[in-house]
Length: 300
Image (cartoon, rainbow, N blue to C red; front, side):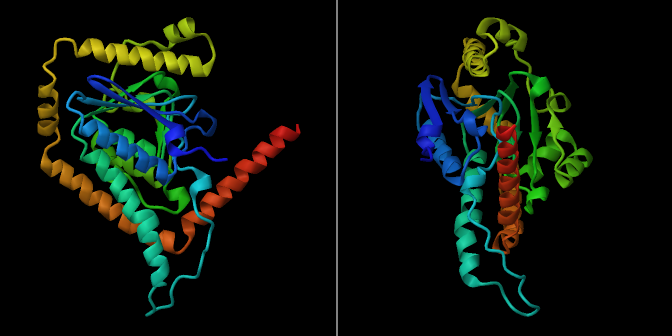
C-alpha cells in the first residue's frame, strides 16, 4: 500500500524554527503532486505561527529529493498532434489544466510568497521541481558538498522549465552556464554553486561519520540535528522580527512578481506537451528501465 503524504513528510515546531522533513528514503524522497501540495499546507502552518521565523526543509537517506514520483504520473494516453486548423481535445486541455498547470503553479507560488526565511538543508542531490524549490530558498546548506548536486531533467522528460528556475538559476549560476545545464539536463555540482547557492557551515561530514557511524540514516539524522543547533546558535542575539523585514527588502515585490510571471510562462509552455502525452511516455520509459535494472540486479 502506498504511503500517504503525511506518512512520507514529517514536521515539528522548535521555535523559532518550523521544520519539515522528507521521510521516504526508500524512494529517494520522490514526491507526487499530492506530496508537494501537502508541503504547501505545512508552509501555511509556519506562515501563520507568530513564533516561527524560519521554515527549515530537511530530508533523509541519500537524496534530498529525486524529484517526481514516477508512480504518480498518469498512464500515457498519447495522441497525434491536432491537424492544421484543428484544436486540441478540450477534455484533455481541462484535465491537464487541473492535473498539471494549476497544481504546479500553486506549489511554486507558495514557496515564492512564503514570508518566513526558507532554509534547505541538503543531505544529498536534489532533482527536478525539488531542485527548483531549493533555488527559491533564502539559505541553503549541504551535509557533504562533494556529494551534493542539483539537476533539472526537464528537457529529457519532454517538459519545459519548472519552479521559476528560469529566473532563479541564471541569477545564481550565470545565464550562459544555466542555459547549457537546463538545455541538456546536465547536473550542477555542489562545488560549482558554493557561495552563490550553498552557504558554509561548521558541520563537517567527516565529524558526522565519526559521531554517527557509517549508517546513512544515522548520519543524516545527526546532520539534521547539528545544523539546527548551529542555526539556533546563530539566532541567539538576533531580534527575530528584523529577519522577516530583511527578506522583504532583499527580495522585493518586483523580484517576486518576476518569478511568478516566469513560472506562469513555464507551466503554460509545458501544458501542450502534457496534453499530447509526451512527458507521460518518457516517465513510463524511465520507470520501465528502472524496473528492468532492478530485476537484473536481483537476478544476479
